[in-house]
Length: 127
Image 1 (cartoon, rainbow, N blue to C red):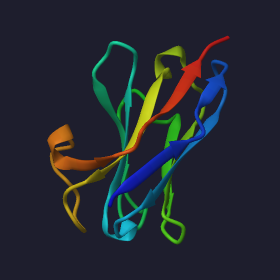
Image 2: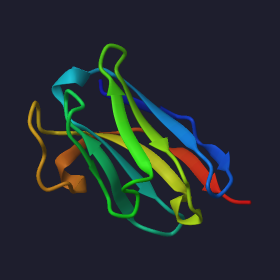
Image 3: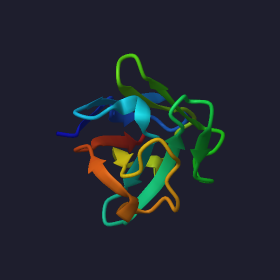
């Protein structure tokens, strides 16, 4: 079965950096685009970033563009999110997600298009 396990979250100061990891198993990782979402306390789920199968194409929400970098290690089935210049509004539980669509780019990027989710990892940005 599909399993996605996030790690790397923690407390970080504003302006600092953090790298999140998502270990994937139970499905052919290299046949899927992969995504990061986040949810702040009391807020709805927000799409953060997505990456193509080969890693050549990456998409970012405007709120994180220029600060976050998504990349993947297909040999080891790991999805990453490098977070730089973090802000207080980045505080949230971060989830990696697998789309239903095989091989292709899912459109639109909405919850209904995804069928695999990790348990989440907490990121807290605070002084």
